Length: 98
Image (cartoon, rainbow, N blue to C red; front, side, top):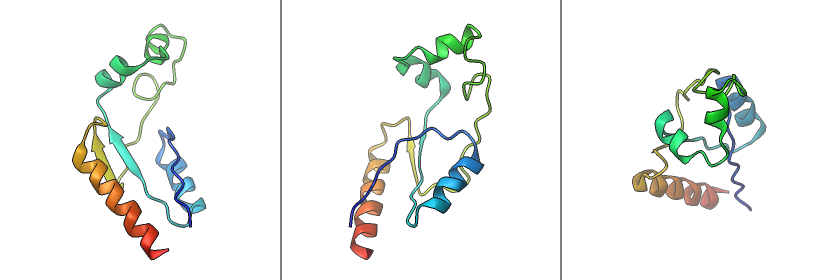
């Protein structure tokens, strides 16, 4: 068996529900990060473009973002060691059950 990790931005719950329905053993990880931190880390300049009006639907600026209601793992700011450990435990547990 293999574990497949997909890094995706899905600002709407309906999109995440569709992904969950397509994967038999879906695990949602929410990297809960304040917009200010996202803007500081933005190497592509997406937030600057959004503020300039060139990307008006960027989630968190002009577009909506619907936070997950029940993610399996929450990582605050992407630097949460406890969440990373919880994710690894979840993945190992799922691999053993497979």
